Length: 631
Picture 1 (cartoon, rainbow, N blue to C red):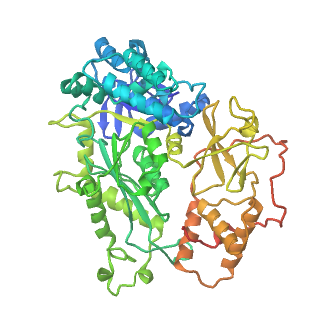
Picture 2: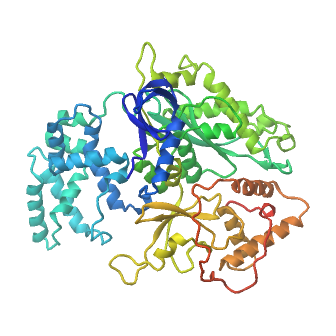
Picture 3: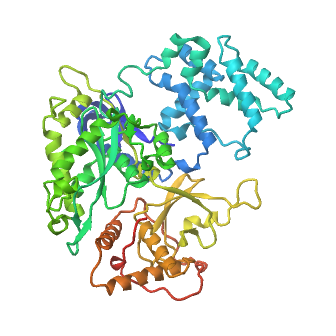
C-alpha cells in the first residue's frame, strides 16, 4: 500500500516528471528547489507538479492498493488506534533509541520487534488502515457478555493499573481465576492483552508510574493543538449567504446559497471553501475538507482567476461546530484514516471558533454591498427588494468571492498579525530572518482517492443484474466475478460490498473490489438513462407517493421524472423554490466523475433489468425536471 501523503522537506527524495529528485529548499510557500539525481541539475517545482506526477506514476502501475475505510470493522479501527497511541511518541522523536522502543513494548505487552514493525507499517502508508492486521478468523462473532466485560474492567483497574506494575500475564491469571469462580467463559490471553494495549499510554503511565512518567506522552510545545505553524489548526463552518442568486438560463431568482469555509488559524488564510445551493451536510463538509487539503491550481483556473493560493496539505487538527452535519461517521472515519484530529468546539465557548466566525461576519458585510442582498435581518433590509434586484448566478458569485478572498483579503494587512495572511503563511513555511519555517508539508498523493474517502458509503450485494441502490441498477463487467458471492464460512449469507456515490450525480457509483483493493466506477445498467442527483430521485419518489403509487422499480421512477417534466413544461410560472431546484439539477449535472467507467466487452450479454412490467420508459430532457423540496 503506497503512502497516502508525500512529505516534502529539504533532504526528502521525491518522484516528479518521471524521475527522482532531492529536495534542496523551499523557494516559496508552494514551490521547492530540487536536484535531479540522474544529472545533478536543479529545477523548481510547484506542489501541484509533485502531486500530478505521483498520481501518474500510480496509475501507470495499475496495481495501486487502497483499502476502503468502509471495510474496517470497529474492532479493527480501535485496534489500529491503540497501536498508533503506542508508537506515536516514538514517531515524533528524531533520536529514537532501542530503550524507548523497549519501554513502548513493555507498555503494550509485545516484544521490541513488534514495535519496529508497527513503526515501519505506519511510515510506509501514513494512514490508520496501514496499521490494520489480518482479519481474525472469528471476526464478526458476538461481543463478550456484559458480566465478563465488568470482570475484565475490574481486573484491569485493580491489578494492572496500579503502582505494583503487575505484568499482563499476572493480571490475566487473576482474570482467569475470577471468571472461573463466577462460572463465566474464559477469554483468550490475546483478547485480554489487546484490551490492555487499547488503553491510552498516558493514562497507563500515570496509574502505574506516576505524573512524571506520564509527562513524556504530553505533546511537545509547538506540535498540536496550538496554532503556531501553517495547518496546525483549521476552523471550519457553514453559513447561508445573505444574497439572492439567479439561474444561468432565465436569470430569475432562485434563493440563497450556502458556503462552507475553512480558515488556517496560524496565518488567517482561507484554506478552502465550497459554495452550493444544497443545504449543509456531510457532503459539503467532506468536499470542503478535500479542497483545503488539495492543490488549488485547478480550482483557481476554473474560476478564471490568476491569484496565488499556496494553501494545501494535511492539517493536524480541524475544529468544527457541534452541529449534526459535522458529526457523521463518514467524516469521523475519513479523518481518522488520515490521522487528522477532528475536534468539535465546546458548547458556550465562543473563543474556540472565534476566527472563522469573525471572518464569516466580515465576509457578510461585503456581501451586503452586492445586488440582491437580503442583509442580516428585516430591519436592515427595509424596503429593499432583494428578489427584483438579484443579478448574480452561483458561478458569478463564486468568482466574486475568489476575487475578494484571493485577490484582496489574503494580501491586506491583518490587524492582529501585522502583515497580510499570505505573507504570514509563507513565513510559516519558508521562515524569515527572525524565525525558522516549518519547512515540511504532507501533500496528498492521489486527489481522487482522497475525495473518495470523504464520500457517503453504503453496502450492497452483487446479483446477476449488477448492483441495486434505491431501485436504480448499475452494472459493469468488473462485477462479474462477484455475482452471488457469499460471506466467508457461510452458505446462506450473501457478501456485501462497499459502495460510494456522489449524491450530486448518481449516474454511476464507486465499487470497491476487496481483493484488488481498487475502486471502479460502475455506470447505470441502462446507459440511455439521464444523469440525475439523489435529490431528484427523492423528488420522483415523493411525486409517486402523492399519486398513491410506489417507486417499485427503475422504470417507474424514470417515468415519474418524465411526468414531472411534463408538468413543468405546461406551467407558465415557477415558484422560487422550483427555480432553485431546477438550477441545482443543472449544476449537479456538471459535476465531473472521479473515476472513469470500465469498458465492458462488446459482445457481453446482460440479463434483463428487473422491472414491474408496467409501462414503458420515455426519454426526457433532464433540464426540464420539476423541482422538489429537499425535505
